[in-house]
Image (cartoon, rainbow, N blue to C red):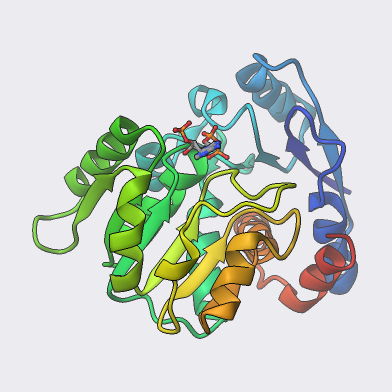
Length: 273
Ligand code: ATR
């Protein structure tokens, strides 16, 4: 039996165990998915211990996504983002992936959204970094708006530096730029915690429009204020459970080399969010 798991602190409310176990059940894979909650500074040691114990794969969440970098061989994308959310122990040292990036891309493509034009990313923390690199790698022009504007500029510079000039662009802004940026944008992602367990949106409602696709990384509540405003404006809306689903789908596929049973994983998730 293979053991997979989630490394986080806290992890008790994670939806990853039922999502991955639904995939094992569907494909007849003899595996379990469990949660691990080491001390908040013990991410790298936990990965080394997991290798010793023969664990097959780990997902990694707050506060360990940066810490585990030192215990893995990161992919170039994970290295650029500066965070690992999936560890594959079939190599030595283990390989560190960032599947949040592919999760964003697959959330849009699953909904028939074309990845072209201008994107606005709200947030420049861990989630914002993955989203910004993912969309820039798809060739979109990326505008990053963050409460702490300097972090948006730093992230934009890092994104721009990793792309050949002219292929794509990235710019940093404060949140006050959203009312001018969003009306021109084709895609919008909320990568802040604004809207989590609160009826508040980081984006002015009157800037939203029918020709934009809006993804909210927040999935509690499942319909955030931002998504309600976007739906009212006629926009395409994609809730945060899709991003959670597709980062997990991508992790499953890296670990097993098989196509994930997306519908079954989605159902396991949807009945619990
Ligand atoms: P994560 O890994 O989930 O991205 P994080 O790295 O702590 O978490 O980043 C949180 C993001 O939400 C940041 O962009 C943060 O803005 P700051 O960089 O200015 O801190 C943003 N954020 C959190 N609370 C916010 C609020 N009340 N208003 C606007 N942005 C907020």
